[in-house]
Length: 237
Image (tube, rainbow, N blue to C red; front, side, top):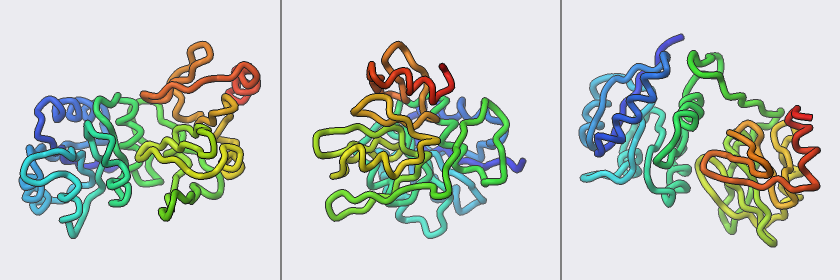
């Protein structure tokens, strides 16, 4: 497998150290360099080919979002930031992923997998399945904005009165549709209803503790009436 050349851009030494440590655990990543700000990164990108940039948003001189906008020839970008508020802006820039600090190695690994060519398989921790049906996503409307949600990026869906909250790896929005309407558009090979108010992506479940499902930093309920069927679909019954 050809190694992925990455550049780490963050004004915080500790943040760079964490990303550097995560990269060191993956033998298909080669750290080409580290930069403290976007201007340094701009110079570095002109000097050689980079496959992916791990990029902070809140930096001095030029923030990460405007840095990406300024690039005419852009490598793939994974944002690593302490701020959730810029997720939609990042999504509109067609970045690979959006990691909110502090993020785990498992979450980092999932993001890096999206950089790999479809024909490549990562060498490292157990791979995360990204099974999809014939269609790999859906389009949903919020107000005048239409969002595209890739199935593999959706963490879970939550019923909220007349709306459904869609929580994905890159954004968190409310759609004016019922949970049942959303459920009809999701492949049941990936998504399971755990509760009358929740549908979860089984590939993002990190653990189940009693009637609680842990998905990244989120906690989702298992309903008493749904538990047996839910566990059955996971092959646990």
